[in-house]
Each structure stands twice: as structure tokens, then as C-alpha cells.
Length: 154
Image 1 (cartoon, rainbow, N blue to C red):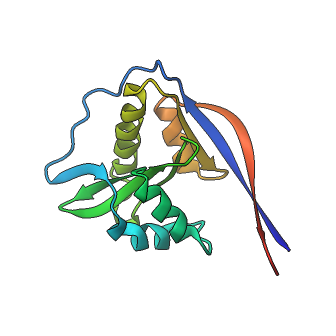
Image 2: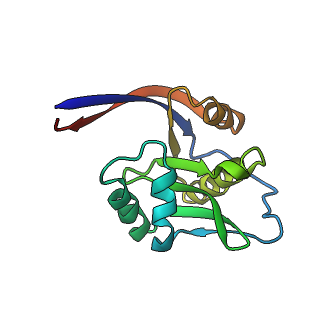
């Protein structure tokens, strides 16, 4: 059996946190739930892709737990609410990075959860400095480290 461990840091935004204000989408942008037509893009770009990850994204998408930022109807950034209610898989396509789209997606999805009086919990793979800085910038508190274990037959 092959064992791979991945360490993540946990970030929490308290459910009483005020909503992020003054959020407006640039012209030609929309933020909406993902549909199955985007599964291949999401799965193929995920850095932690594995056999069965497409099935996992399919499951989350069918449960209406995937949200995307679209520019002129092209998906450029997304996030999922994982089955346990935490955010995960926040991702911006390479050629759209450093433009604030990840921050915008994180604020938009956080507001959806905060409006429901829910804590916003997010996992960040250890060493992902960009995501770490983004969570801290938006007021998330770093709370725990978690090690995920993947077991695969040899």
C-alpha cells in the first residue's frame, strides 16, 4: 500500500463576521453555480488530481456546491463547498491570476455562507503562500493543521 500525506492549514471566519461590502462584478462577469460541463476543466487543473477526483467534483457539482466566476461566459475561477461544509478547491486559471479574481470569489462565497449565519471554514495546503496571505487578508483565523492520508494499492 502506498501512503501519501498532505498537510493543510485550517482557516475560519466567524459566522458573526460582517458581510464583505462593496462587491461588484466587473462588466461582463458573472458568479454562479457550476454545471457539469466544467468538470473536465476543474479536474484537469486541480494540482491534487487523483483517480476518482473527477467523480468527486461531479458529486459536488450535482449537489450544487460548486461556484464559478465567469468572464464573457468563460470559467476563470472557482470554489467548492466540500461535503463537510468547508470551502475547498479555490482555484484561478493561470492566465487570470494576480487580478484579484480569487479574492473576489472568496468574498462572494463567504457572503453566501455568512448570510446563512454559517462559519466559513477553509483548508489551505501547507506552503500555498498566496492562499495563506489571502485568507489572512480577509480576516480568517488560522486554527489547526490537518493531515490528509491517501492510501493506494501498489
